[in-house]
Image 1 (tube, rainbow, N blue to C red):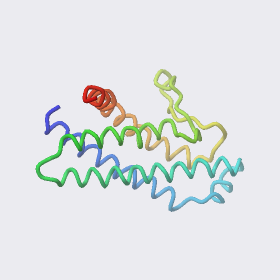
Image 2: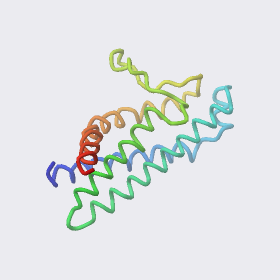
Image 3: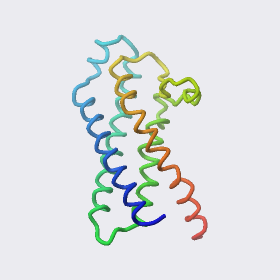
Image 4: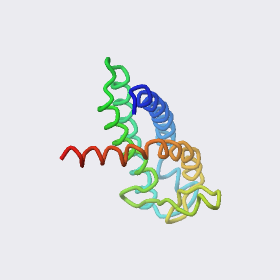
Length: 162
């Protein structure tokens, strides 16, 4: 891929991450376990697990945003560093959004056929959580489709370099 295409993708991902960080921060700064319990009685440990992973997603997105900002400011543009960063963002942010390591929620692969949101929770959760995920899911899906190229391309490059 040419420098201008990769740079354009970096700018797009930077904007996406900035919006995601703002949404995660807004939710986390205004939500406590007690708020979730008040909104909907449920498994407190499950709520804690979800909030814990949302905090991790926030950190991953912040790190990705910082890295994008640095790479986009560097002259000349470092295409290799940008591609490696986009690969890392794909795994740390996008894949973790749809399939977190702590398994607090999961992606329903059939959702593409039903027109429903793909993020499903193992237990009932408050509407505020569902709403936040619904608001973010479309952009996460769009960026996932854009960055899937780096998943295969970066791995191919790493295998070929060995």
